Length: 639
Ligand SMILES: Cc1cc2nc3c(=O)[nH]c(=O)nc-3n(C[C@H](O)[C@H](O)[C@H](O)COP(=O)(O)OP(=O)(O)OC[C@H]3O[C@@H](n4cnc5c(N)ncnc54)[C@H](O)[C@@H]3O)c2cc1C
Image (cartoon, rainbow, N blue to C red; front, side, top):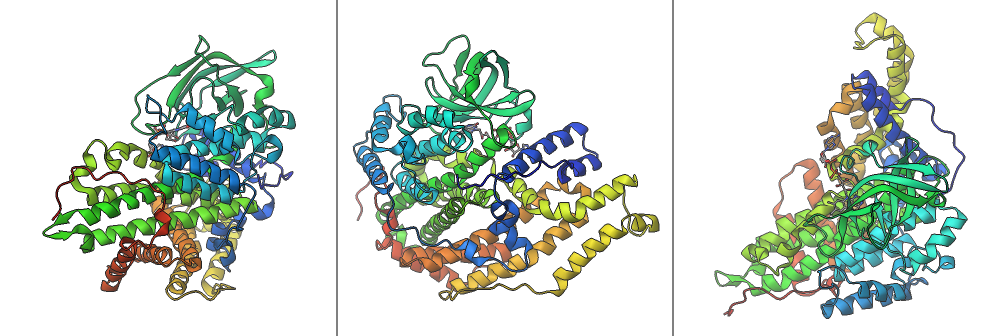
């Protein structure tokens, strides 16, 4: 898993959020629930060696430290070869061949069992599993690149590899299983005999995971599970699922093997779902459903949410890789259409508006690729990647949504809505990633909270505690009594604040970068210089009411995220040999700079869009190779 288990002690002190919520008049219940979530998060944290924990992650250091660790934003190239490559190549060939032969789905329109079996024989389901259990031991950076390639052929097939390997049973068992559980489950998961899913969401618990109600009760040598799960991808009878339950009042994960047929203890709850049309997504109802006691995963620290959070980080990178492949399909289908479609006597691919869309699509692909490469490398290095994976998830899902609606749909006009058109047939699949694995804005708030947590602990929590001790609910520093109560805490904060203002940040090791990228990197560094003061100022301004200032937190979170994307994409673009990929990265950086400054686009920006689009139109983007091209609908004689 790349993480090192440490023997850190559990935090006894109430978390900042819990304290803040309580003091700001929230109910005890809300404070308790938020505290429980924080605790689970901290327990995941303590599984990683100090150097890989969030406070030492690239994003956290870039915001809070004096010197930005640029080398942690620019991963080295992947080794040319790895033992897992041959299995990956076999799998790619299977998906490509079946897609060309229109042989991916069965008569119900779902990815077929024969596809799963053929992929199983080629090693598809065991990519992340160690060779000793029959898997391919693929490093995550190779796996995520592979997923982007599979998505370019078929996004749903790639999506199921991520469900199985990242959030399904594979990651929980690999990371948290005991030796007996590993040898019992991993071989079946690797050879495809057991395909897996992850069952967390419930009708009452999606964004709010503290509301989980499915319970497990020990009865002899098994647990009896009662409750209902909702929206579970790849969940059908016979699957192996990572099942999140409440056990003795705490979340826990059981590895449950669903029976081959429904019975009075286990029922599928079917419903119509527009998204993921080529896969199964079902509700699951359990009534004293038996799971062997030996199937309980026991993390070294924490509880079931510790396990859930771990897999979700990998799933978020996989989601971004999937978005990258899917946008390649969109771009590969925009090009022939924009060449064919003529209005006012000219192909629309000669028009500036359409060219800008082509350039923007390539830019979004570049940004996704850069983030996937970077985050996967961090995971392989051993980082937890909490902040970084959220950036990739939000960027990938928002990019896909923009690509579908603003670029693909608009360029295809009315035909977008015809049956048989890629947009109309898949629009829900293009939008759903904004919701699953954490809705984007909710994740943005979590990003903010994670980013400011240590600073809050160091400077604001002591202030809150001093106020609590003195029973002051509305502090006012002009009140001499209040100022006296807070004198030590305020002095510590004032020292930090003064240090920020007086000392300039240095960015050691700024490498020699190609023209353009050098400017982008310097621009990102300049913004990073200001974030610590900006974040701290916001905390200081809103104090204990900050938890209610969601829009401000979301806005600040987005600014930091955009700056991270800008920096990562600029450094990635600088490394690209392919001119189109480099120009696409540059174009995204220009867009992000304008977004961050609010400046209007220049004429030279529009020219750069045209230049990039012309290069792509003339076939200079090899990244699109292998993407399926649908027939142009409602063709007419074109003269
Ligand atoms: C296609 C698809 C596949 C899925 N696959 C799986 C799967 O395999 N396994 C699984 O366990 N789950 C799965 N899910 C569930 C998914 O993870 C949840 O839908 C998601 O986490 C959001 O939960 P929810 O739908 O209950 O939203 P709700 O909790 O009902 O929230 C709705 C919205 O309200 C807002 N909101 C909620 N709380 C707050 C707050 N405190 N402050 C501000 N705004 C708030 C947010 O905008 C949020 O998006 C899937 C969902 C979909 C659509």
